View: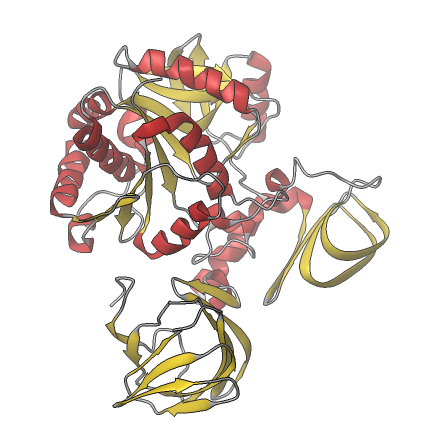
Amino acid sequence: MEKIIPVILSGGAGSRLWPVSREQNPKPFIRLSNGQSLLQGAYVRAAQLAGSNGVITVTNSGFLHRTQEEFGELKGADSFVTYILEPFGRNTAPAIAAAALQALSDHGPDAVLLVLAADHLITKTDEFEIAVKKAVELAHTEKLVTFGIEPHAPETGYGYIEAEENKVIRFVEKPSRELAQSYLESGKFLWNSGIFCFKATTLLKEMSLHCPEILSGVQKCITNAKITKSELCHQVLIDGDDFKTVPDISIDYAVMEKSKHVAVVQCNIGWSDVGSWLSLTEHQNADPHGNQINGDVVLHNTHNCIIQSPDRLIATAGIENLIIIDTPDALLVANKANAQDVKHIYSQLKEKSHDSYKLHRTVHRPWGSYSVLEEGDGFKLKRIEVKPGASLSLQMHKHRSEHWVVVAGVAKVINGESEIDIQVNESTFIPAGHQHRLTNPGKDLCVLIEVQTGAYLGEDDIVRLQDNYGRS
């Protein structure tokens, strides 16, 4: 399959998978029972099809280093990757337009894009490759190809495609239960998977007809983008001022529902958009009572429950049909029948600006991670891990002071005008307003305990003066 350029769209908070999925730990980073994240699964599928053409990944610029770490964990992950880095989400039409323009520039007019979501699951790889071959053949006939999934239930969480052989009759929004049942019984409807295949030139031509303002806006973004090149990857960093002028709209609304050149490949590829706790666990083995368990759990008279608790014991008695998801700072208890309603919990937390919609207690950073151990009025305790050779930004805080105590490894610290090495069981105090920086010069992990004190301890009280990861 010559000149196939897989495009991985990595975005979306996954609000229905709260409390595991959060704004700064979105759905693509969720780990499955096999230990692999959804994003890693998408990369493996893409790399197998890409050959020497490489993979394009469109993601938020803040997730670049986390994404690179995810890809780097995979054995044999040696495909060249072009990262198109968005300053914020603008939906799928601008993201795909950016990928098409980049592919056209890098690979020429014969480039065929295969657009994949980073947060979907595909279990039947052989059938998927067969479907891709059919889609590529149609793409070479100047068609915009979508993948339609043969439905096996009246699912109300998916959009539908009414189709006749490879011809799309119409797209349908997420239906009511009654309509979904009638679609299933008719045999004429497919689930809309959000997987696409087309030549870059075909898509750009259709966008110039149906959404020229999106295309022109994205062309400006790509022209003005900051490009960083290395042997392993290219990074295309889109400017925020340029990107905010581009309309926020999906590729379905912008192009697919308007174009007269849309085709569909009907397939059964073991696809799921992993849109709820039910769909995330549907491939997980259950015990004799129908319970799907992950973690330290003790059950009595418990049936048909989903229970996940990796960090502490959960005991249940006399319950059924519940979803129980435990994390260090938040617990979800929901009826299985209301699995889709978890998104309303997420929305309420976001409206209240509650930290738990945005952050986990352990937060990943390009240099390592930190975990909040305890906090109260005027203080916060963190455990900070800094990877070998990594460095925090040169920064200052307006409202808080910090006390650093090294408990493992060694730290090289800039504190005001001083630069010092701190060994295990040594410490330094950083007053509010002092510029400071920590670097791990050793070959082992540097671990420290940070004690913050002050009237305001929010994570946004930070002024970055210099940063190795482009965040200043």
